[in-house]
Image (cartoon, helix red, strand yellow):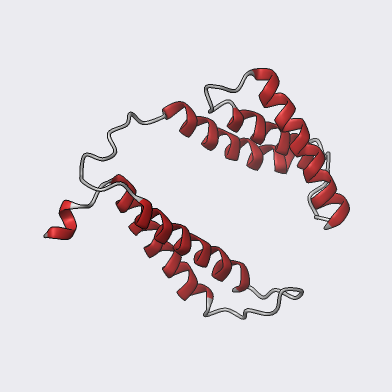
Amino acid sequence: MNFLRHLNRDRLGALLLILIGSGVVVQGTGYRMGTLTHMGAGYMPVVYGTLMTCIGIVLGVTAQRGPDAVRRKAEWRGWFCIVGGVAAFVVLGHWGGLAPATFAAVFISALGDRHNSLRDAALLALLMVVAGTLIFNVGLHLQLPLFGWGV
């Protein structure tokens, strides 16, 4: 029962990250791994699961002690903006292409921070569109077109 006394939101989040990450690693090892240049179906799940587990361990070690250590109000604006940004990327990625999807996702997500102005969010989104275009379209030749209205 001593363990439950030290369980707060940070430690519970850390425990969930460790459990989910470990589960993803175990499941991912059931697929072919491949190599870095020729990745198999299990490569990315194992990498992401390992990262989740490591982040969970670091979060658990650095978490504040005691059940009342974290008593903050939920930042609903941030949550809604981040979820809205992901949803915008999914919809616009399918209907509009990489550039509008990236711009909308970054712009909406950046508005979740109360310190960002509309100008700052737009500038960040524009820079991410340029970076995303150079990396994913020019460099990696991603199959998602830059613009594809109504495709």
